[in-house]
Length: 278
Image 1: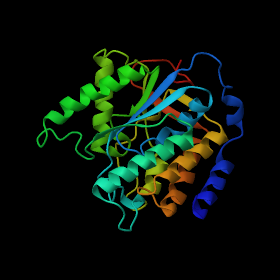
Image 2: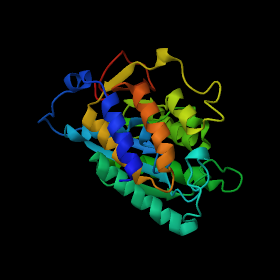
Image 3: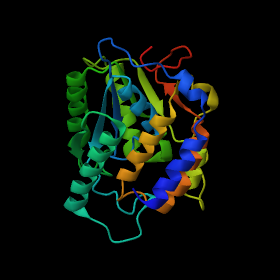
Image 4: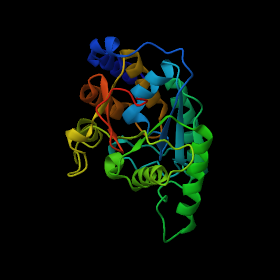
């Protein structure tokens, strides 16, 4: 880990509230439950990384289901992007797959499932009209195989407005509404805090009319400092997407905004809660 990353990790651990230790339940000995994070890109687990680590630590089977190959990732992340001439094309696809596997290991998850659809083109209805029609059943097939008890994905806003994020959100929601076999109604939308978006792009700040109102975040899942540490390690895996300097801005801002709890929006009506499985 970079020296800068180690320093950020130390800051994060100081920011994690001690109360989180008491809030997080002990690992269960019951039949393992399954949580699937359906993502557009290999680094999209970041907004929920601490609770993915928490559930895996407690014995759940946690999967990253990643739709795109990440081949357009270099230079697409604003101030997060590496300024150097990093890998491109098929080499970038290969490296990002390795980064996804590194992040999954850091969080204690199952090996990631990589569907390999073209990055940046998930909604390309004009250029490749068949893409959405191929992607929809492919997602349904994987979810039927995994049979999750709960799913986390991007909200309709896509977190940062990314079209690929929005398409993935819409397709997962579509599968639930269509009653696809093995796809549960326990579907939760994740978001990036405004503080994190501002830290990513200090010049631009958070786009207007992007972040949902607080009243919609009715499921608030606590995590422990060790889960925050795992999330930091997973962030460090995505070397093609985030520099150590950017991580030094983004990670502490995000940890302060979380304050030991990840807030989620249920896609379908439910009461307030602290657990994605209940």
